[in-house]
Structures are given as C-alpha cells and as structure tokens.
Length: 361
DNA sequence: AAACCGGGGCG
DNA sequence: CGCCCAGGTTT
Image (cartoon, rainbow, N blue to C red; front, side, top):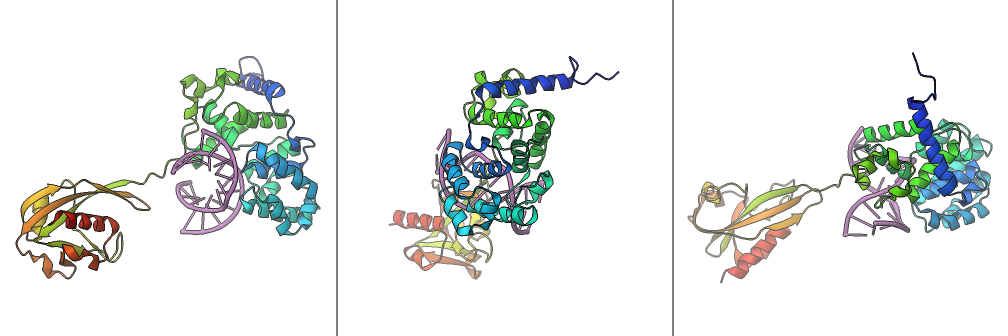
C-alpha cells in the first residue's frame, strides 16, 4: 500500500518539513532588500546574476544601479555600442561576460521582441547563460519553478549531504544537481532559491560556518561529522609530482664528464651530468662508463621545478681514474672544470659545476 | 600567495 | 569527459 503524498512519516513529508524550515529561516534572516529584488524582472535578475558570477554583492550593487540607469531594458542594452557596455563594466573584470551579455541582449531584441524568453532551454541557449543562471532567471525573475546550483548552493548541499568529491567533477555535479532538484519546491520556489543562496552566503560560509544559526543543523551530515568545513571537497591541487634522480659528478683531475641529452624532452640537446637511479650503486654506474671510483662523497640535494613536475637531484661526487670508453661517444666529453661556461647546461647542472669549481683548488 | 568562481571552448 | 581560462576578491 502506497503512502499518501505528504502523509506523516513519508519521505515527501520530511522533504516538506525541510523546505518549511528553510523558508521560515528566509523570512526572518534572508536578504529581502537586494536592488534586483525590487522589482525582480527577468532582465534585472539576469544582469545581477551575471555580475554576481564573479563578484560579491557589496561590490555589485553600485555597478548594478549604474547599469540599470543607463540600460533600463534589454533593448537599450542591445542598441548600445559594445564599448559603452564595457565602460560600465570596467572594474568588474571578466569582460567576456559583458560581451556575452551584450550579444545576448541583441538576440533578445532580434529573436524575442525585446523580452527574455520564458522557456528554460531558450534562456540557456543565450550566450553567457548556463544551467544555473537560466534557473535563477526562470525562478527569481519569472516566478516559475526552476533549480539553481551556484557556488553557495553547492556548498550548502555538499555539507548537508556530505557529498564527497570536487564539485567540478561531472559525477559530483550530477549528484548535487539531483539533490537540488529533489528539494526545490514548486510553491515559493523563488524564495527557496534565494534562501539557499543566502544561507550559503551568510551562514554556511566556506571557512567557518555558523552552524548554530542554520535551519538545517539538525539534518546536516557535515555538521554531525564535526568538520563541516571539510565540504565541499576542494579542487585537487595540481600538485606537481616529485621525481628523484641521481647526478654523477665524475671528476678526473680537473675535468668532469658531461653528456649531451637527447634532442627532445627535458633539457633537450643541453649538456648535463650522467644520471642514475637514486637507489643504484654509483660505483657500478661509473664502471659501466669504464671508470674506477677512488673516492665518493654525497652532496646536499637540489630541488628543481619544471612546469609539470619537480625534480629532486641527489648529487654524488666521484673522483675517478681510468680513461673510460665513454669519451669515444660523440655525446660524451671531459670538460675542464675551469671552463664549464663553454657548454650549454641546464640551470641546476650549472650550479653543481660551479660548486665543483669552488671546491677544487 | 593561493583559492575561488559559472560559463565557454577545446581536445 | 576533463581541462584550462579570465581577473578581482577573500582568506
């Protein structure tokens, strides 16, 4: 036997109580006096949303007033020269968005008779309007039910449901959109959406959420965990991998063995020191070059940063004897340590050779 | 100094 | 899909 919708104890009844708690919080603590709320026309909501994509409310407010005074309608915006639109945007940054706004206004003038379309897909097709901005215009400006998921709402939902994973990943975003869809009501949808944005902006803040002020505290998995600030999962740091190598400073009298690197790849074509695995026996590496090690000493490691990885260089200084067959190769030579500037070498190799020169009388 | 932010564009 | 970008603000 199916439960009646909204009957006590059902899932839907629980969702309705949650929505009621959010709306009650909004009535008391939400933001009701934002400039674009009076009146909340589709055009004003659109412009405010685009401005708010990149900037905080306090900064946006004066820009919004100036923009509306100069471009009171989509048609006024469409008819203006792009240069003038950009001039009123100056200081907000992300000027591609002002250009998109201008282009979209011209679409609205030419295709929709100067009024924003009341269709969600048509809104989303306009340049600079994605799924969330379209939802905001549709709900806040057009009084329809539509789901939004901006940065504030993402944070609230990710904490509330302890959604793991960076929201930039498709699978995580899908889960958050599904949660947003699940809770968004048909009744008072605009207030609900505004409430979620306000909650994220004023209570469920990134670093130090004010959980004691939150209507969702009792239901919130993030709060229950004791570490609500752990959500949303931060964007994975493009932490450059750290690699290790051994560089062999093979010194024979006042000369040092240099090898030319392959033409492509790291330090392509430059002269460098022979390399070996860090855990390899340097004596056998020298032996492979036909050299006998008389004396060995470890030098402190160097860290070198490339664009896509970091390299810890573990130098070992080896005084060697024996001619070595290595010099027969065209990409290997014995270089005087007093004249290492004659060869093109990578920066860390140059530092090592400099150090070698200092330590050799 | 680094993280953040919605949408667009690219491979 | 995953990745990068724009630029001013927050932390």
